[in-house]
Image (cartoon, rainbow, N blue to C red; front, side, top):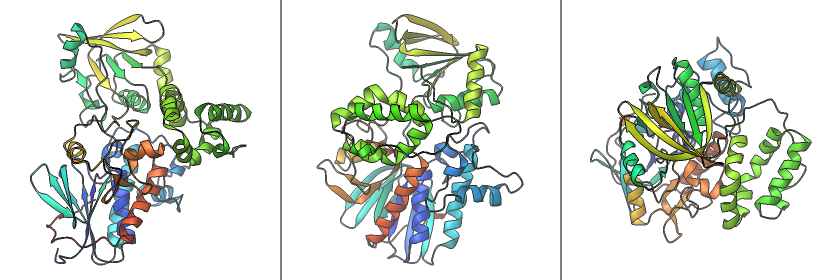
Length: 478
């Protein structure tokens, strides 16, 4: 690195969000620029969602909708069929393995790097950011291994945090259960690297949570030859609906003309679904979702979260038919039991675990004996509770402000983080799940790809002032 005046943009997180910001910076930068992609564990472009996984871990969106570029809707399909696997073509309606999409993102990074203008370079640092100090000339990132990096701008592309441990009642029996969460019979994060492969073929399991993560686990367990019984518990016992063919349709009403309340919208959406196909109706509502969410008063947003969210999630975030069909087979065969309820207590007995489940409607108690409990609940999104060193550091300095609903962080309309006083930062930006409280729809590829492009444009339009002399980095290898 010979140019000491090149500005530096640091991106914390190398999953889809961070990688796409890097791709757009590489493609759009006209002058000297240094991009540092910070990824603790995984290869840049993979992240937790797209790392090497069993073949049955499928994208839950059809291949035709997975392009990384909104203006080129066939980009992913063209890459799969012409670059990745020309001898085994993929159709528009297929659900491809997640690991293939990870390879696609890695290819995008390498391709953008090879085409970047002279003086525009990408490097990667395999380390963990644990603190950020801001100053007039930029921000200094502190790493777990002791090194520091000064950057002109910082993008927090943190993705989804791991799930919180399931709540347990506070009583004498449950007090001992808290220690269980630190023991060998509990997997705190379904997608930890060793998680799936730690399961014995004949172990009986309890999966806590019934969303797409649980369904992916059920499919993967079949692939690994698992033979034990599986219990699944969630608050309502609802499983994601499967994708089925549905013709696109336009809504017969203007959602933004309705009163800013949950009930009128639900009534119109139900009527729309009855007149056609509910999948088409929900898909047609998607472009309006951020504006609808922002129009709702806080009390209405809370009402949606309390009463509607579980039903919305299983219809909005649907499962690939092959996975949904496999889960139905498990239920019919008796190997999978789904229960609506909550954990009432967990106690270890030698090599097994006794779990008490309080049923949702009856209040009755179900007692299970299993070998392992796997947390398949959704990510922890309340940034007041997250104890990651970087989040704690930013929170204590007042550089970030969790939103009132516990869904993410406060930002302005363009992704700049707001401080505790509500002022937008000139140095710190974010995208992806951290913006869920503001936009609601912000965790899937169609939204993130737009936000990544917009943040890159904003950073480059700001001029990205030059920083201090950069430290050398290791060139990325993808």
